Length: 185
Image: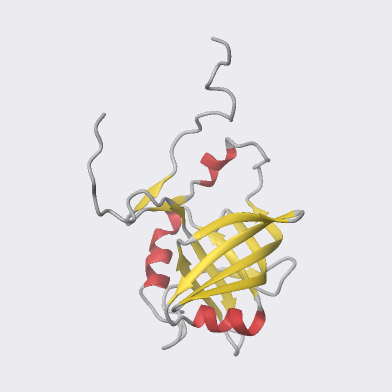
């Protein structure tokens, strides 16, 4: 296989898609699509890492409260994802498309009823670069649909949407670490 140089910046940066939920000052829910999401480790606990650029009502709300929900997007949520992504919460509330939400179980954050996995996040650190803010967060609670366990195969049941310049869905379960390379063979 021969490789060639390319300028496809996003084509290999595969990222999960989340709708980030915050409450506005008036108590109205606000959701914003974010694909710059990852995780890292700090001392004895994992941290969720979310980056947002530009002027967003969500960034204003997080600066005020230091908490948000991260609602994993599945294929059945694409219309909602497009709707939230095509409206600015700075200009007006995002309430033209009906959706159900409830308050988090641990933190006072809006969570989407349709999301199959939701993280309730508390910001513990931020990093600023130009107009981008990166939030390092402890997940104070994780909700998921009933019937999912902790098996890796369950990721397929979550049907997460991934972003790489375009939207894709996660495919088949392939196996676990240390099952493909057979040492000594």
